[in-house]
Image 1 (cartoon, rainbow, N blue to C red):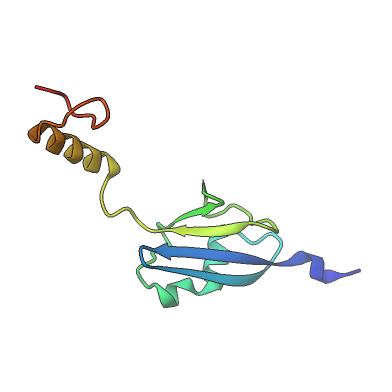
Image 2 (cartoon, helix red, strand yellow):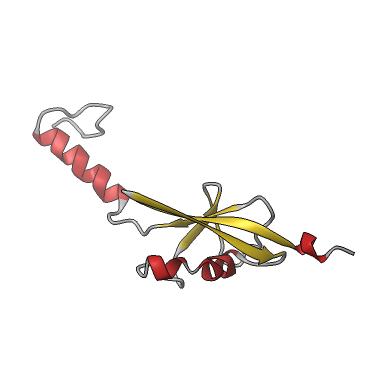
Length: 111
């Protein structure tokens, strides 16, 4: 019996605005997403990653920390949002109103 079929490689991806890091990790079947992240030692390169609250995904879909990683998966490590997207949209719409550019596209209400 070949025991190697229970071991496979997983890419762990983390992207910053100007830099991307892809690490390959050898894992056993049954390894969870958070375990793969820990095995990758990505936090040694990016100590700002909080293992307790980090958001993880597989091919752009959010996954729970305890999701079992399958052969062929790519684990994505998401950065925390700097600003709440709703606040950003609201500010953009308010600016459009002030500049007289408010319309259906900008989302601002015309007063």
